Length: 152
Image (cartoon, rainbow, N blue to C red; front, side, top):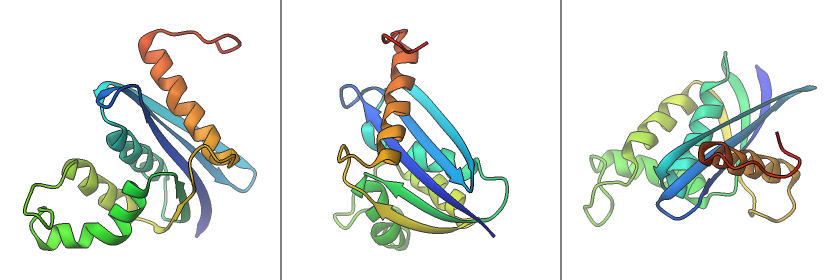
């Protein structure tokens, strides 16, 4: 099985507000970057979409280390998801799970792979995380028609 290292990040300007996501996929000497944006969304949805999009971009089953700065994503997948499913997609307080559509999509995308979920503190100098963060913010800029100096 191919080994892939994935860094993901989501960003939002206002919450809700315009948001973007970015992902950096690395396997051996190969690197692929992905990003996208939505006009009205939340940061949590962008964090989830980054992971979903990265996992869906893999053409075959892989050993994946997915690095995220989102405890919401990491804990949701590793701790909360099984409980939500047992409760019929309700939280412990019997409320509907937020972003259940994306959690289902993430579970399906991850099921094709052997995924290890790793958390890294955001904006702490981790190069992969900083790259994914730049991609997410550049996606928002493109959505809003903003041109940054030195970026085409």
